[in-house]
Image (cartoon, rainbow, N blue to C red; front, side):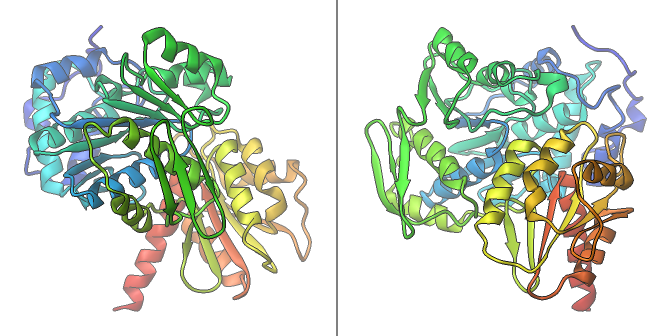
Length: 446
């Protein structure tokens, strides 16, 4: 049913195609009663009005964790193959433009505001959330460009996410774990069913989770999707120097490790390889393009290690599954006298589950307050750490700070050159520190 509340703003109160991007983003946050409003009816209605049609090979990537890495690997490999590629991911880290890339370049403010205006005009009386309208705008941007491939990250769940109006030529579920329980359910079986709805009948359906929920497999089989399971239809192997991919009918040997760090990245890379194998009748991808793409791929804040001393690591791990991967990666780094952890979380996350995974790798905790209705106060976060058994001593401490930037500054002031600083948790936490670092660099450079 079409939602008519809140009332559509008067035409003269709406931004125009040439209004600043910041004006548009503030406007889009104000036009719907709820920031998350699950369902596809409203989005489909507006897409139909716009006659939205993307004439390109469409790859949709979902999952609890690993979506962004898999999308970025696909983009890098396809660009190295000479294709014209559109990439949509969310959320952004610092700038909204990060959500849309065309041929490796961020969409400009003008490109985005032009599409915002077009979607806003087309929606008429239909109320759309910020995410829904911006998703439609970026999809429309891709439709106006002569692209060969679009890679689309699908967010919350999958079944009712706005991106799911797109009939993908190939769909990937990277992993299934517990997150967003208020919307998706509190078991892997319930969440797996939500994510399985990005699969399409008769088309490749990749699942990189080594232990896929039975509900995901059952749904894929029920709709007649071409299900590719990790360990059955594709796999990987490797040593310290190189790795290889093995699929149903294709092998790719002697591959260099992805430039994205972390033990889980070969699983993400193998999912990308499986998708490219499944689409090889539509997309020719030379071996050299795979090697070059894996070497060049970049994605901020996924176990990103900044140059210099002390060692600084940025990671948007915000659920127990991602925190466990972060902990494994930290454990593989070698010895550091002290690890200083800057942590900020949203209140609706499994905070105790996240803390438990990283606890043994941390010495000094800097708890940052996050703004917004879902942001958790730093003192409340400190209480969770105390409840988990973190004590106060010369070698262990908990402090609270008003923002991620202040927490990081305190950690940086205390850390020795041989120590490491780990900034993790919400995207807002990492974004706050990245903005702080950019500002500091600008000040240093005059």
